[in-house]
Length: 157
Image 1: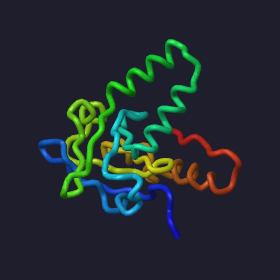
Image 2: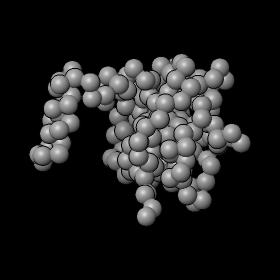
Image 3: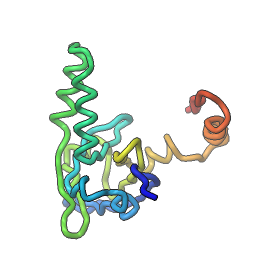
Image 4: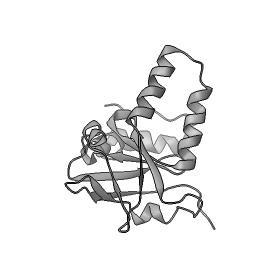
């Protein structure tokens, strides 16, 4: 059996140079075709998104297929100028550039959280827990509804 996407989450520390371990839970899903190069860019809700090169190219194809409006062109410009490539080093670490660390409020720790396909969200732990943690009765009810209805309920904040 071969799972074709990232699943799960992991918390890792960030050192003073912005390096963090690329979690084993995610590395095991990388194929030879995926290689060791990744793209890190800004994401929604002050998160970052880590893409394999294939996923990044697919995402950019989707963006370029959008109508050429001023808002779309502005968004594409922000994505391409704020995103960076990096390679896993010999100790399976990635470097998060300072601009992206500030954008996502990352300081000592980062949460890697699976997204669609071979992409992962990189989150400030407190922000991740506040948005996705099943920590209130309302968030648990909204999660449970996802199993039983055609549409998922909005979680009250």
